Length: 511
Ligand SMILES: [Zn+2]
Image 1 (tube, rainbow, N blue to C red):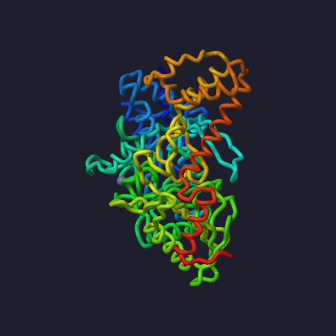
Image 2: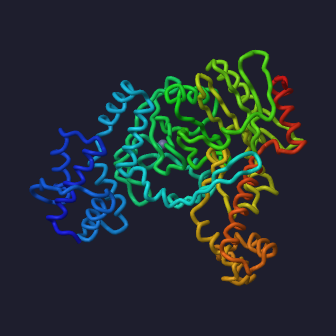
Image 3: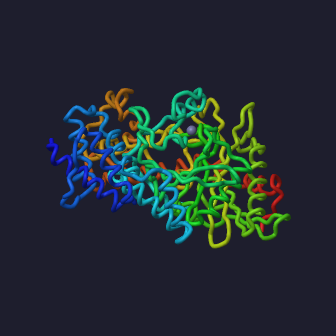
């Protein structure tokens, strides 16, 4: 453990770091220094800091070690304490908003988001050290490139837990992880500390919303727009207008909403929010499979995107025409049934849903509407348009907005489980059916995969070969998962049912 003199140096280095990297102003230096000294019961500060090295290794870790070893905090509270420490040297929310506005006014909104993003990385709100542990690769699939990430920085959720969360009464504070009241929240072992979170007020469709970055960064500058009001997710014409407003304000970002129903929605259905960012997601890169014209707006281009699932793409320069066209598709889809392909929009509860995504290209708007349906039946208790059970070893949770666009975020458990699958192919582990059929064994869910791969490739393979076999298997599973989410399958029957929706349902003419 460092002594008190070294602790004082570390605290002074933290303040220096904040001045250089967190836009901490000179006027706040004494205030912040005194707050830190009081936290540790120290007297006068030191003035000579000898430079500060790396934030985590050279400043934060020694200070948190001191707090843990001196009994100020319990071992499991380390992250909470670290967040408090970094929150105390991050400028107050109002200062951050003011600086964001000044940069936006003088250098443009992209410079302002660049600055905010850097701040969120520099104060460890976005924990790049954890995120860089994620395993990532790309796969060239049938309809284009898909991205695959094994997420080692966030625990996974079961779709049923997510559905149940929607039914929970509004108790506790903050009501959920997305409420604006999270800013500055000290957190506890069930709710992350948010002293380092800073949010920017924005207007969308005349409503008060906020912009923040996701702490998990599934792709570059993963941004979240959240309603200032804690209210359930909803996708309707107003949603589409807000998405278009967002891309008017932040034309360098795309933005989209998860569908508002369980199974096809995201992990948080209780708080209306959108997700966006600077990354060009795989679905954006595919062209049109078929083009259509609508009578009302001659300049609006409508197409079916050439992608795994069922995407209606609307492009145009007139925001109101694009909005009206997209709203019409949305509303028609909500009421569209076609029993020949298993689509029943409502069976006493609503099943048809949409994942909408908006972006700008030059002065044109592009809205992608991914048609979804969350119906279940006896043969498909997890969802008819959800990954089949044989794919649940790879992904069981709802397939949300990021995945349906071709960027897979797979559970962290797969890292070690896939290594074990390779052990079977390399003969490092023997196929023991009793062991594999034991439901308590984490490899139980992979048993059919292991038996199939061993049958196809044997058990005398080297690691390089096994790596390739397992990666190919995951790539193929991800493509199959995307196909499972298609309400209109990519076969003759499915595509002709899609055409029927576009022509008979929406009144468009194929061109
Ligand atoms: Zn909330």
